Length: 606
Image (tube, rainbow, N blue to C red; front, side):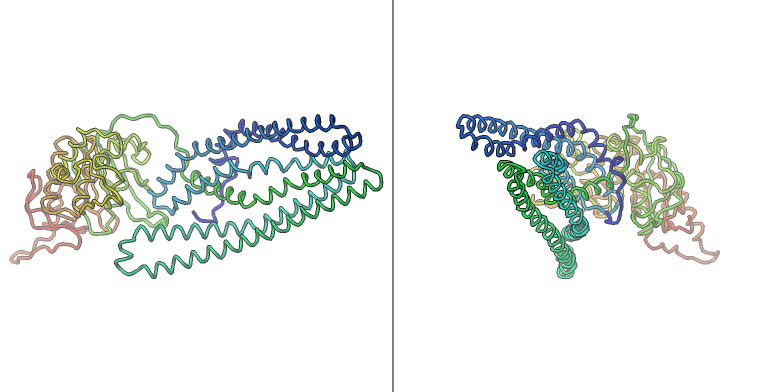
């Protein structure tokens, strides 16, 4: 998220709505805060009476009674303060509980859309907000208005004490506002620089192997160190600014305490107040200034919490409200694409346009075209990972990007071009980290031709995958295991994005057998490929070139069209030269639907 983005008003923000639902808890905390702050008058009243009554009467009984009473007040005061702290902790946990799932989902969807996001920063923002709500910062905010109460009590002793307390409080408030103006920008700049530094470090670690092998570490270290040095400089500046503000306010607080004592002594010398009032007045002035002192001391926490809340609001507001949708019947597999186009996230550049086709349930579609033709982009549209910029992609008449993926996902299969697995067993990964149905796991592995291979692994289906397990998959094993994961649960609709890119001949034949079996079962299959053998099992073929659809139909018709265009003049013999990046026609077709013609499907011919 960019630092320049401005969050919407707090009252209409997602975080604000959660806080609004907690208003009863806030009211309870506010009432307890009133009691606690009133209890803080107890030591002042005790000091006043101890000097004016106990010393004057020299009564031990009065001293014991007064001391017993104030100890009881202190006990009640401590109990109320403890209850308030517990309520704040539980309030912060409730806010975290209600926001955590939404923040996780929004982060997930934003990452899928390839928009810049530092997930660690987002989770740190949630932690920052929770710690602020459960900490002393909120208590300092609630205590600040009670400075007026102590000013009013000072007026009971003498108007001069009230005026002095009011002036002291006003000066402290002005100091707080100046401190805010000085430190807020510095703290925000340091926070943004730290976020950028962490993001760069995370991106470097994700490509650690290539970085080390290509000798890129010194260059990346220099780039990261520049960002880190910038962060450290800004952090020092913000700490210096905060230190100056805190030092100045500390000077004011100590000065006002002594000046208040001097004023009280002057009034006592003039016979306007008693000696007990002098001591009480000194404590009163300190109590009047103390809430603002705490407020200023916690100001960096307020700034960080506000920035965290703003970033969370931006994330959740961009993600939008996702209302509960009515459950839909299981998909049959009829796919309709009308005028679909897609733009590159973050740039707005059109990478795919003008895609129109329709598949009946149980048909197999082959996506072909040179590299960067838009096949992977179309695959993302077909599984609803990306939303079309224009047009529609409908599965059984429902816009697939708007379908609830928690509902649709288990009924759909997808093999991305870049395959990764989560920490867990092979069975758990095939079962998509859900409850493992052993029968379905084995069925999916057998259909993908991986059952025997998996049994040969150290613990079979219980073999652990992920970092630190010491067990590494080859590229072909990784792809075939991803195919098994896509087949889990017998989905009615499957999209393969270059599923045979790392497969050897045996693995590719297994894939062909899998697709044939799926078609016989009535499963709709879309697969992108550069290899001609896989095209042989397709009922339909879609040709993409430079992000546009240039051909759609049966493989037989498209190859026939190319063959007719590439036919040499009479009396001459010429071979059709294959277009770069596009496969020649298959030499044979397992189902007899495609001709055995050595031709090439080109965008122009289609």
